[in-house]
Image (cartoon, rainbow, N blue to C red; front, top):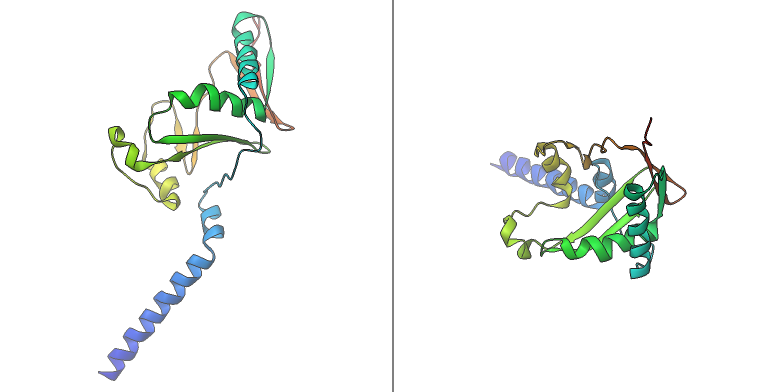
Amino acid sequence: MIKNFLARIGCLTVIAVTALGAWHYRDAISASLGRVEIGISTSEPSEGLARQAEEKLLSLSTSESAAVSLSAAELQSLLTYRVAPQLPDGLEQPLVDLRDSVLIVSAVVLPDRLEAYGALVVPAMMVPFVLQGIEIPGVDASGSDLLIPLPARVAAIDLEDGRLTIRMNVAGD
């Protein structure tokens, strides 16, 4: 009986130490699972910058422009003033973050206000695993990344010096 009691205490101690270690190293564990943290917007959005970004994007379809370049402030303004009003109730505070070679778009999700879309709440650490199981036509979901193919007319999208540059195939290419 004492041997059984000591075995249970030993198991509980191992579980407690493992849980404490996982909690202490939760940031490193989240990073290794592909979780991306976004804090606050690095640029102040404005209606003027949103209009400027829209005009640049429209110039791609109305002229022979081969490329446009958008700053992080223009992208955040476009997201805040043009995209955010179209988001469903329950998605708020969309943010854009330009990193070395990655464009990250995030938003605050309020599950209790997403009633039309179901009440499935997924812990942040489980998002990469859930994304791997989702099948979206034309989108490759792997880890915490959603890889979306570019339209045929878009030659490339580059991220350099805090700017997003969209290069188009010009007629004759």
